[in-house]
Length: 320
Image (cartoon, helix red, strand yellow):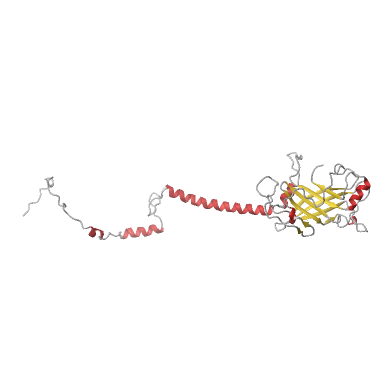
């Protein structure tokens, strides 16, 4: 019968030079690979299923997920993704707004009062709504005038008596009633017969009506000829059917604009620039000419001894 070890004695230790009991043991690799893996306990499976629905919260208030703590780069990437989506939405909105503003005003970012440059396909001549002809083939050309302009009138400032007939601009502007209304230009004309007698024009207002040209640094940007005229007085027509008017109004539709230009921007460009003291600082960016031609003009000039010859009367938006 074996004798039990004395509990007060140190435990039995194998001799240092004793043989290793596992020495020479051969492991079967196929047996190890085929060994079944211990499945997680029921509690582990329950917690894993719960974590898939809601991240647990520890008593300290911190949150974690089964996949482990999120790295700083993961947080930064998600922040960039959210900010990127917001920035893209804002950029798309600004692009749409700029496109709408450019469409309705014909203006692009650049110096104030200037329209988008004429870069579209060259238009063709066409009839205008309400009367008149748009010389679209002349868009972009420089120095074009339907009526050849006479030399500068030496008669002096507006209101100064002149020996021959004279045409001046009383007003000019652009108006549009709504976003769906393309708008029209309106020009107020002042006719002075001079000191030699009355000026009686052929109907409708000279045989060919009135011509308008607006030119900018890029060339012709708006034009029309054979435009009808509205007389401000019923007494302006003589019994013989001629026109003896002192004032009249001419309207030109926005269809007379060359592609790439807006009516409001062009109207602003026809006004003279001023400083803070309302002092004119230079010529307007866009030059306006309104003209008519009638043989009666030349006849009255010859009768009055006017220094300017020819049948054309013209007015512009420049200082003389």
